[in-house]
Image 1 (tube, rainbow, N blue to C red):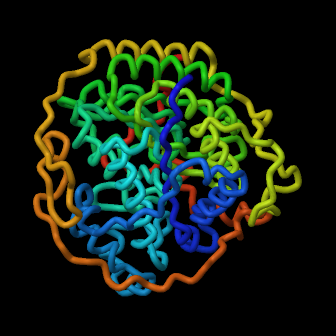
Image 2 (image 1 turned 90 degrees about the vertical axis):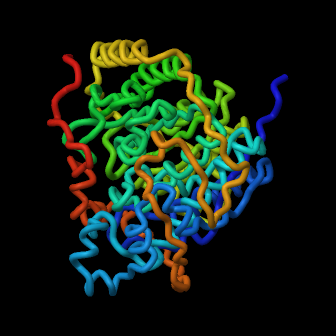
Image 3 (image 1 turned 90 degrees about the horizontal axis):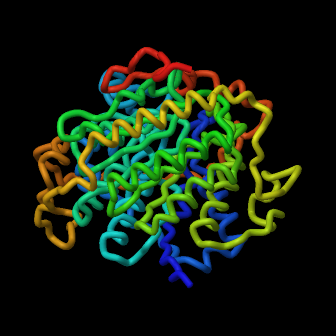
Length: 458
């Protein structure tokens, strides 16, 4: 009988208090809904539930620039009007507004991801969950795609202190550009992203984007077309991930579980069911490598909550009743009140030939890299104090600022309890989508986006 996994789950109840804005599609309240469902099923009693310590400015500057973190710690809606030029350097206000408490919200997300990585490093957990994390678009010196602080990069940097190789896997409908970019020149992190490619934000993630310098071959991009369903997704996901795991042999896996790849998502264009999405999580769990599962995108919040609760049960190895138990947000799940997100009759434009050619191209890419690359580990302190630096390999950390600041965030603003339900109404959907075309379509990336050509022939 296999040993039971030691699972840690991070949750801060205040994460649901923050509000991007009335018609903004990103709703932090979805994390509260997901946790309520987790608790209603009794899953919280079967794992170690921890409220994370919030990340400090200093911790954030392990990846982000000092100027950007300082700006984020001080910005308020009022300052946006007073300093529009400076604000435009760091924020695209339409997608990434300076809402009340944006720094505190980011510190919750990043704090859970840093703490979770430490638990894996210290051997305290086999699986860690932080559904408030997974903000994969944030760049070193700017917010992007609803993401302000890249908690994933911070977690991976922590994991690299103890692990020679870390794999990053992204099943959000959007390309994981911020994470890929951070590790594009190193062979210690392999990033793998399954995403919609073409006239779609962020416009990166072409099949031929494979990394540069020492990192050449260590970025794996799987560009998909509209309407991919469970069977087609499985037919490409499992072969690609088997090849990656066999070739790279990571010491830890960080998996971004964005749910905007689900059928019926307000921004996404895939057709995965809840169980099809969760099958990816279960498949990665089967490798018995330390696994860190994070949240990400997802804009039909009742389906986000269903899926993350279900994936929590998958990680625990627990069967759940498909009839939803009563919970604080029970009325959101009507009229069916079931633990399911079914696929629709959306057309799948991913042909078998198209997917097979992608698999073949990735196989060729992986054969060109060394088998389980040998990487020298640099000696690091066993604990990385919050208020001091630690030496880490230059090829991994070349994007970090050379100096750090010890400036503390200003006194926390009082954030009113806001339950941002508005755009969950089908009637409000067009209003919610107005102004967010940039996130649906091609955006600006640090590396120039390719033209939306097809990566391989039909």
